[in-house]
Image (cartoon, rainbow, N blue to C red; front, side):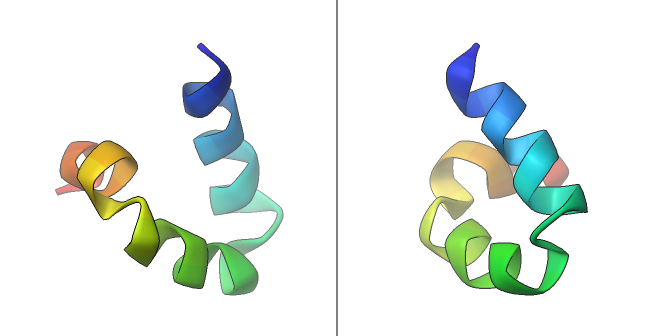
Amino acid sequence: DLPGVRYHIVRGTLDSAGVANRKRSRSKYGAKRS
């Protein structure tokens, strides 16, 4: 559940910085957003 919580935080708090992180973890989180 740690990755899921981090995804929510990064997507809301580090919206701008999270974009770079999300691209890297697209396989884990990006797949769900798609």
